[in-house]
Image (tube, rainbow over all chains, first blue to last red; front, side, top):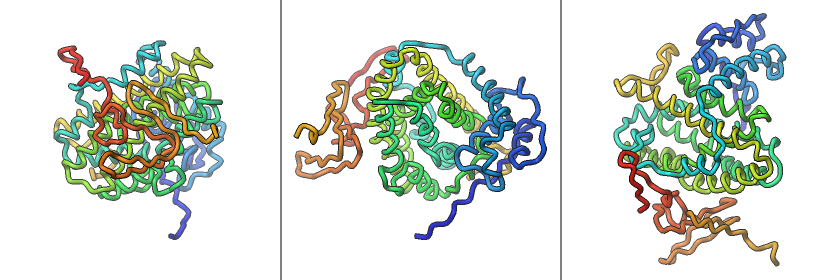
Length: 333
Length: 71
């Protein structure tokens, strides 16, 4: 095996004046980023600008100086973008303080629910499944990374249990078994590019917003409980959803790597959901009960944002249209 | 030695959680290995991936009629 230095992703195409300004600042050009107030909080322009700011904390960009990560001017813009995004979520997501109720709600299987995984399982077409995987790659090619940021913000039993889950996500010491690698293998098998960042330009704002919410909560100690809520939502709902995707892959005749990614998640997340509830959330809220509302906020925001993506995909697929952004100039896979 | 004993959590709601790698012998003699830090073993009998839990123990609800179906 040869080891080559991985190439950082190329900068995406701007989607409006704010992202244009942020991209220009990233390249090091003297830039005045326009006022953020009044920008659509879940819109393409704001979400792409925020996504690019966060990406500096993950893999960076080709041709962008690593020092931009802690550039005070960019951090000021990032804080403005975060404020608009967070305020919108606080407004759109009802508050709650009953954590047991909240978690129990996620543990019920709704037999007549019809989300993306139900659709793909029953009658989705291969091109739709491939688009779904391409969009999801924005998270899964860095699967578990946003949640890793929360580790130093925890202590004692919740920290130990969260690391146990992350150890599993990162392949328990085997780089071939990291969930991001399993996802990349699936992409390659489905004929998609497994290059990190390849599908940013084609991804809708709703997909960027889901990943941005993870980065936002992971990078702010004050939102650590919301990050736990976000993580819990994924882990608690993943097993049944992954099982439906395994069935979708089988029905559509996909190969073993494609099936393996979701099959692994059925089993792994059946364990993770138990650990997150019993060993992370319970001791965390016993020690700091005042964090309850933020855990609930994290759960409800995740569901809200996932619902927006689902709506976007159905809006396009219902008419047989690609969910890839046409403006991106990237053809559907 | 007490320290060497595995931690096992009986959840009642669903699986039995076993800490550390496990080597499970099934009733037909086949053996199934899991190297996870924690393994969730099916205790409700409904899993499609026995001996492992696949969350099939969960309560199922049909929203339209508001009826519960726990089978």
